[in-house]
Image 1 (spheres, rainbow, N blue to C red):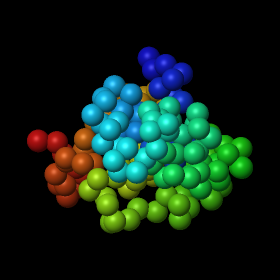
Image 2 (cartoon, rainbow, N blue to C red):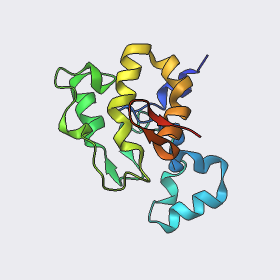
Image 3 (tube, one colour):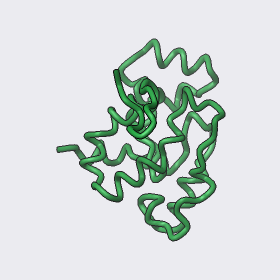
Length: 144
């Protein structure tokens, strides 16, 4: 069973903030120092997750427009919006090998269909398949 803190770490867009380096810096002083060298303000680290910060993501340096949109609409997740999926969730090849943003819609569909607790159990494997999986046509990404 996942805790309320785990659930609070899932952004409205379907990204699991608990996997973000800005959050993981809480347990890794070297990572924290590295992030500071990349321009993220030390006082913003470690990040408690976008919901706690009302969308003011340290990696962005500003408030996330997707978070603001969901908040303004009074929804917890983008899939609850009548305009889902919108252009904010559109995948892009730019930095796809290092950012998990292309799995947002997949994550949101899983959360919608299976529930948040079940998705949280599967989230690590989904991320692994995205970054390390080998695509097999007809089967999807497979881990070797």
